[in-house]
Image (cartoon, rainbow, N blue to C red):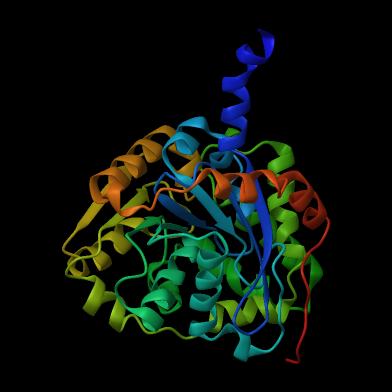
Length: 336
């Protein structure tokens, strides 16, 4: 009888197994991505911020409430984390970022996923729309996020404006180290939000990014025309604003974006800094899930066959994939 007692736990583990992959984008750039949860649930992609990686979402990917409601996918933006870091500026054109998103969607058989972008991660939404327009996603969640790189100077707080030049220069190591630490510290309002281990890991993520790549990521050009013209009338959007954000002026971003989208919702967190998904964890989780379930028609998600679950969640043990890649910082190729 003991196996029968353990069966529900085995099924739970199977459904919430993770699958980590290196995905080839259209130009050959390798993108690290991971999926976790039940593919029968609405599909949801999480996109991290500047100088960091999808590691920032670790807590979310261990949360049973998220996993019981969403099929969770995260990936490292090109230039960051475990994804490749091409050195040439052409590799950071807008279309390349949309193609990376496409590659992740295809790799995990996602159907019109929702996407949440934190900070710099929100700029990827503009790339997706610039290449495709409507029809690729079901909705966007801006987590204290930019809509485009061109908005950086107008909506950044003094800390970000003073720090970014020091993060991209390569003449003074001490200046860089001070800026990197200050930048990561600036993501939180409550010091207890990040453990010492997590804080050090976040700081270290910036060290594996070549300086030219950091500049390419900040200086790339984007066009928001299709995002606002095509997405504006019908795309569901949720903006999560932290009023204690030391890096971005979330209130200004809300004022900028609200007139652009007819289906625009706002969650304001008075006591949260930039990392709203951590400092307002329960409130953000509740709002994200409510947002998804208010938009999605569950019938539109194709039911996944048992054979798919066995092939994709059992035959590809996630821990091997994650561990093998957690020891690598991705490749740096191409000229400057």
